[in-house]
Length: 95
Figure 1 (cartoon, rainbow, N blue to C red):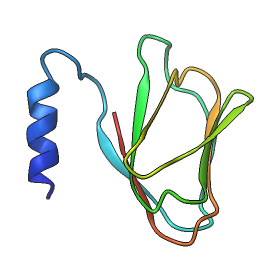
Figure 2: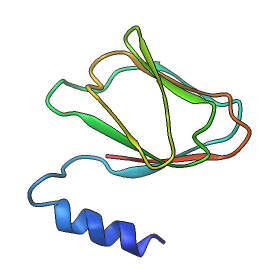
Figure 3: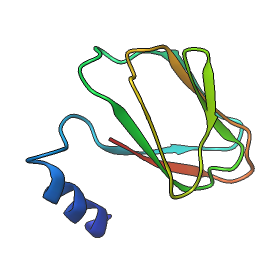
């Protein structure tokens, strides 16, 4: 379904990438409730693709906006949540 993305990820798998990789889609008004990842052994990267305006991620007490074409990288062993107050479908690539 995403051959260019798959090719890039395939090229990274031996050196830089391990674990879960997926697209995350949120409809306007959606919220991902506070949660934590399983350990602090790796960082999580969310690459904003489309519809990021009005969407923020909170990690611990820090809150940051998502931006199309930019990454938010954090230790997901900290409590984190996402709130989408924008008007468009928001899509990110999570790695």
